[in-house]
Amino acid sequence: MSTLSHLQRLDAEHQLHPFTNHEELHAAGTHIIGEGEGVWLTDQNGRRLLDGLAGLWCVNVGYGRPELIRAATEQMKRLCYYPSFFNTTTEPAIELAAKLSALTPARLNYAMFSNSGSEANETALKLIRGYWKLKGQPHRTKIITREFAYHGVTLATASMTGLPSCQTPFDLPLPGFLHAPAPHAYAVNREGDRDAHADWCIAETARLIEREGPETIGAIFAEPIQGAGGVIVPPPGYLAKLRALARQHGILFVADEVITAFGRLGAWFASDIWNLDPDLMCLAKGLTSGYLPLGATMVADEIADVLIHGGYLAHGFTYSGHPVPCAVALANIAVIENEHLVERVSDDVGPYFQQQLQSFAKHPAVAEIRGCQLIGAMELVPRGGKSALTPTSALGIRGSKLVREEGVIVRGIRDLIAIAPPLTITREEIDVIFAAVARALDRLWDH
Ligand SMILES: Cc1ncc(COP(=O)(O)O)c(C=O)c1O
Image 1 (cartoon, rainbow, N blue to C red):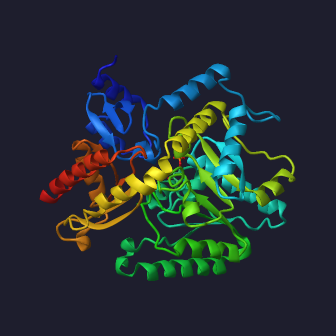
Image 2 (image 1 turned 135 degrees about the vertical axis):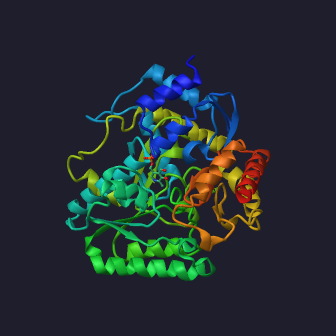
Image 3 (image 1 turned 60 degrees about the vertical axis):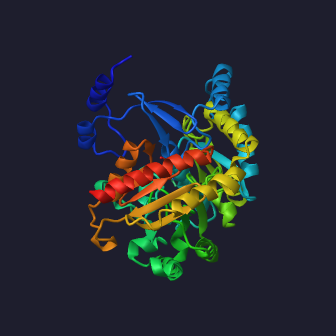
């Protein structure tokens, strides 16, 4: 087995990492994770860490599940790969498409598979363009998303993403990608007036639609809870109003449920909670609990019908409907069902997690707490309070490093830390997370 320093040197010399400052990485040395079991990881030094981010918001059923490993192994032995091009497909792809049609909201009865959340969104974009062209409305090419949105990293999905750090270095967004304000009251110092701010966001979105011309807009994409942009939980009523606005103008509504699906919010889908009835839904991450890459774009019957009768559909990837990740997704969904993980989140660990999260409300380093069931965030402030924050404070990044030193992985985003553990986490393990966060915040505050 290679030594840690050897691996770190090879890594520095040969691998470009996603979302990484490479100079900092090389100076610190890559943290190499070796093993996972339940909510626990073991790194190359043999140190155990509790994974409070479920990998990257995705390992919903926890690490090392024999059911998923068995499904992958058996499928690989039976048929390791075959495409879904050329009038063929494989049994797991069919079974999974049918299962997802049954699980997702009523009108979503077709699945088109891909390999990631970015590809699920990219696929949605292309299906929507194709659909409007077939419907005789080819001018509906513009797409509305929101500030702080995260929809992926391809040129088009990074254009939908509403984070300057993902766009500025690449001269994005591409033309035709429009951004409406997000219901992120804290970011604009309107946390005392959350509902009014959300109403203003809706009014601004309506003005954007009018200004651009409703007949030029193909779709609104929205994460029901904005995840990577900072765990932005909208106030009650906002999502219904956004959905109604799309409907009012004949604009398609796409729920990007890459993080929110498969139980994290104590429901199979956020769309169920807020009754969003989306025209398309994008899935990835928790679909396989991250065991293998898989994305799915769920499509409503009316849209699928137009595409089905619209001639040759020239879209799809070599690995669309790959039988091995599809078999793993079926096993993953079976675990979620058999262990009642959705109910476990809604009735037990979700409320407990929120209660523990809220117990930080009085901590002097914490200015705001946001969350829903098994996802949460804390906005951190320095001793001078919120007004003393600067664009480079990066308290969340600093805080998350301290939490990791305390034995728990959370995510630092700007000045906040985000937490989203596997759904299998126990109350005792939730206590471990928050004890580490408490120690880390005290250290952050002391310096
Ligand atoms: C809501 C949402 N959409 C899309 C993506 C992109 O997914 P991927 O990284 O699998 O391309 C992410 C990833 O975090 C996400 O959170």
